[in-house]
Length: 359
Image (tube, rainbow, N blue to C red):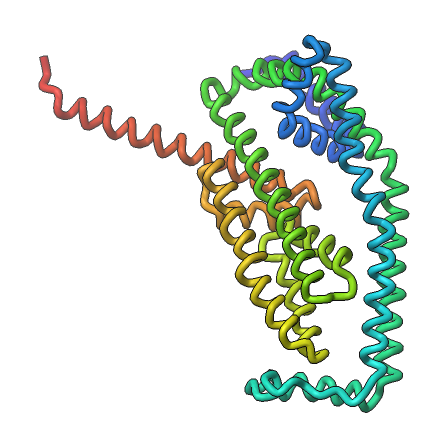
């Protein structure tokens, strides 16, 4: 039976932990981002530190500055073309719906149910074009307002970004020491299982980052090429949106399918059909083959479970849940496999004991 001293110490530790969580809660997400980025880029940091003769502070500072530039400079470079493409796309939509009448191409009109439904939609536009133009203008204004909110939110979150960068610097500089302290703290509770769990977390985090981020960049670039060849008005904007939606499994068709349908409705049959084929055979191929190949082969867990981890983590934790969700499921898989291994070994021992004759 625990003594009164142990009870008081336990309650005191629990209270201090709760208070510490309340104090640190606003910074948990920036710190988590810093830890994920530092872990994924640790091989590059190690090479840089060797080049700088094991100067941890200088290497951490230089690596943090390099990653900051790699994140901020592309955003600044894309801001102007994104704004211009958004204006051009809005003007093209308004110009298209201002002209009438709109007739579907023959091959679309002959498709059962779909052709008649699309023609009814176009006929409604022809009946009341001012209402459609007003609605499109309202959508454009709302999109512009939302973009302004996003920019304002980025400004309001500049402090969190600064804390993430500061945390990234210390994660590089003191990462090895921190990992050793975590191992020492958890070793009494998890024993030999600790190494397997840490390996599972690290493997899943690295594979998810490579599988999701690199695949999204590749899909955005390929989609942008398809939009440009098809003659779409805003290829840069659409490619950026495609890359962002590619972070979510099977998210890219939400962009290239409507664009291709819009081309078909506008009478650009070859461009629309070509973009559909490009999306199905190239963009989706990257999503459906390369992503599961990278993630599942590295982490040795089913891709369906990875997909559930990505979507569930996104719903539970926000954007960082893209990486936390699969990492949590990877640990669960490691626990499950360890239980299965222990159960199999126990059965083998029992079978061996039954077969051994008594001495």
